[in-house]
Image (tube, rainbow, N blue to C red; front, side, top):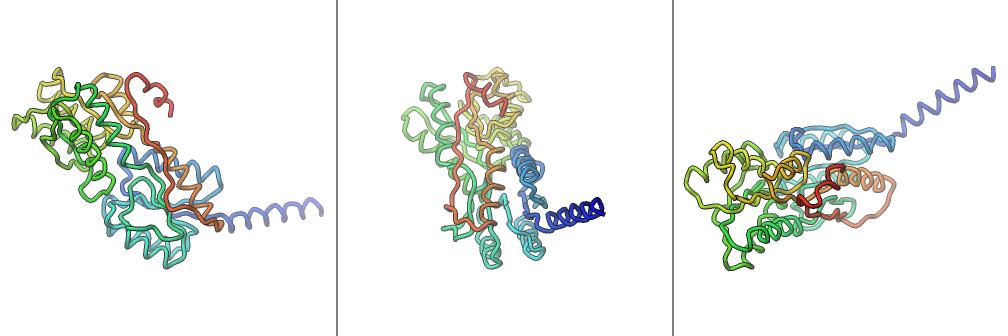
Length: 305
């Protein structure tokens, strides 16, 4: 009889634990972008460690789809929502929806476009005023503070991409023998970065330095130079994110610099922040994770991250 009671008690506890398990809805801008994949896996891993149930949705670069996903999370009664925004311009509407529902909201990675984040909303990411500055200062040093710079912009509706580009321009403006000669968007895409670089090369642009808003576009620029038979040219190429593929390009000498953005750290922190808000904690609206310069000299410490 005691044995049967113990079984019933264990079953009851299991059921209560299941019922009380916190649930987080997560909408990612893309499932197929390398950096965002690392964040998504980090969120999933951290949630499992904490016993949190997570539902992932892929917005596939569509603001309307992402907004619908968030609305579905609200209707499903999740305890918190994490959003990697498709673009910064779409976040004010999402913020309004979620705060009106009284659900904690965490934006991760891409800077929200809200002029001010209200109570119950936190951004977990890195200060973009550092990223492009670290990247361009190192490229400038390697170029002996002279040369023509081409900038590959991530996305024209992304506040982070615009800030990274502004960083680059501000660094270049400091040095009289340097100037920005091209500045176009390649949507954080390797293939679009390749097409853009091929276009510049085909048009005879004189480019000494390529400052790309992320590693994927930088790798695309490298591929374009190879395809154009200019792989031995002295063009300096820099990326941002220090993804595994970016680090491989750095190790091969085809890319000269990248900037570490802690995707794993952002994923873990977004879950931590969401759970703390579920439990009623009042948090600062910005949770910063610093950028770090990565060069061939120190890249080994980042390979293991």
